Length: 247
Image 1: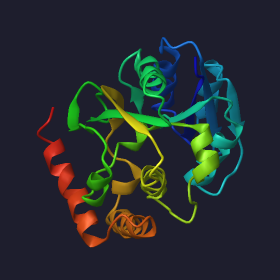
Image 2 (image 1 turned 180 degrees about the vertical axis):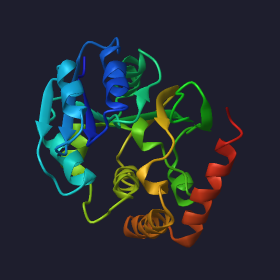
Image 3 (image 1 turned 60 degrees about the horizontal axis):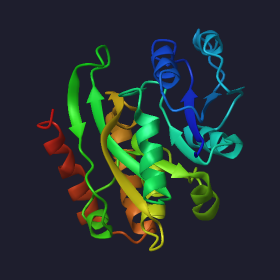
Image 4 (image 1 turned 90 degrees about the horizontal axis):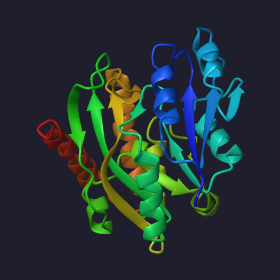
């Protein structure tokens, strides 16, 4: 059976890190490891993390979240890599099992699933539901993308196609998925489950300036990977509207 490395990046997340780590601990899949990359938290985050005894804990200064993500990838010992944000939780105890089955049964390099945006204070309250659906290259050109928190990819794919481009401030995850999915020989499978509950209020939407940066970077990522341009970006954002009506 494949081993799954789940990487959690954190810095001063004392209010939510226990939920994230508990949701990992509750996963019924046995071949797993939890890697915590901490950016030198100054609150109680590290004390909470140490109580959960993660498989790997690194706490040191870094140059941003994508530098930290690449650090986690480099030290991961699993066959498959996934990310669980410090504000997020796995939606059910069998998520890792289902994702591993999807990758193995389809002999895929990656798998993805659906995602729920939930209230910051109540993870049972669904704000938006991102139903990803099946992949096709044509859909990429019309703004489709899988939810990155549900994207499980083999470490060999990162070694072959590269990790996060740290020139991006916010949209390196979009760039990375486009880079992987645009390769003709890259095989990805859809697992029709809700894999992750993601609290609203992420970094890309915290301010008007961040939204502007994200739009600019999304456009750059689409053009860089020869997926599209303005039309792709328009459709990418229009797709979000329907998510508010699927709860």
